[in-house]
Length: 339
Length: 153
Image (cartoon, rainbow over all chains, first blue to last red; front, side):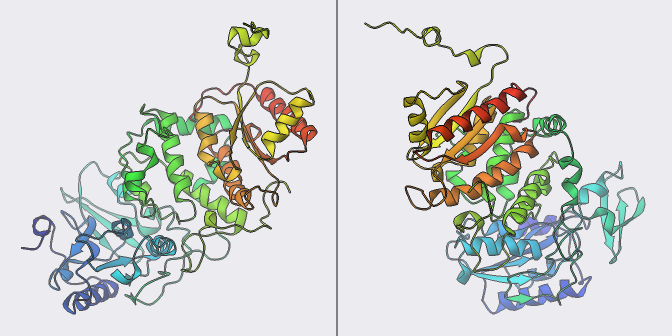
C-alpha cells in the first residue's frame, strides 16, 4: 500500500488534465518515477473537493495522474526540502516549483542547505495564484467547486449557488506585481516561459498605505494585528527559507529573545526574528501569509524588508545560484551610514 | 567601609527612572567606541546620563535583534556604535554589521518606532569629544520625543 493511500482515498480524483501545463507536469512526473530517477515527487493535488488544492506526494507513475496545476497552487513545496533530510534518508525527491518557489530553492542551494544531486525540479511557469480565502468570504455556504478560465474563476457552493470572479481581483498580493513568474532554476520546464505581470523597477503597492501612516497609527495597527497571534508557528514551519529548526532562537530560553507571554510585543518580536533570519533568502513568496490561520498581515513585514534591501543594495533574493546572500558578504564601498 | 557618596547610586536609581525620564541603551564595541566613551569619562566631558552602555567584542557581534529586544523591554532609544569602517579590530566585522544596522534602521519606523529613537554611528578610541557630541545629540533627541507609549514593540 502506498504510504499516503489514506489521503488518496479522501482526496477527489483529478481526472483528465484541464490544461497543457498540468498534462506536461504529469508526463514529466511519470517519466521521472518510472525511470527511477526519483523515489517520490512532490506536486499539487486536489483536497477533499475540487475547490481545494493541497501538496501531494506521488510515489508511483499511476499516482502522477492526481497532480494538478491551476491558480490554487500557492503552496511553496520547497518547504519540504528545507530540512536537508528527505524522508527516508538519501531519498531522491522530485519537486514542482513556480517562479517564487524556485527563488527560495535557489536561496537554499546558494547556502548548500539542499543537496542539488538529490533533487529533480519541474519548473512550472506561473500565471499568478489566487487566495481562496477571498472566495470563501463571499459566501455564507461552503465552496465545493472552482472552475478556471484564464481571466475568471467560477465558484460553486454546496447548495449550488454560483458566482463568477475576475481572477485579477483574487490574486495574492505578491502575484499581482510578480516580476519572476518563470522558475529561475529547474531541470525540466512544464511550459513555455510566461510574460511577467510587472516589469522594470520593483514596486510594493500592498504596503504603501501602511508606510504612509504616522508612527502612532502603525503602532496601533500592529498591536491589533499581532495581538491576535497565537504563536502556532505555522508561518515559520511553512517558510521554505526558515531553516534553523531545533536551534530556533524563538524557542530558546538562552538567549531569551522571545518571552513566553503571548502578547503583541512578544509576537511582533517573534515575527521580526523570523524576518531578520530569512533576510537575504526571502523572496516574499507569501507562504507565511497563506499559512497564518488568523490572517495576520505578515506581508507588511517581509515585503518592507525586501523593499529596503532592494533600495539599499539592489538586492533580490534567490535569483542566481552563484549570488551571495546579502548578509554573508559586504562591499567596503557600500553606500550605507556615515563614513 | 566607604559609603556610597553619590545620591543616585545610594538610592539605586538614576534620575531617568523618574516620571517622564527616558532610558537609552547604547551597544558599543570594545575596541573603539567603548574606549572612546572611557576617554570621554576620563576627560570629564559632560554627557547626558540616560545612556546605559553594553560592551560587546565587535559590532559584528551585534544582532539587530538586540536593539529590537531593547525596545521590546522598554528602551526609549538605542544607540549602536563601533569602529569606523576600515578600522575594525577584526578587519571586517563592522562591514558586515553595517548592512544589518541599515536594514534595522529602515525597519524600525515601519514598526511604529520614530526614526530619532535609533542611531548607528562610528566613534574611534581617540574620539572622546565626538563621543560626547554623539551621546548628547542622540539622548537629546530621544528626550525630545519622551518615553514611548502604547507600543506594539
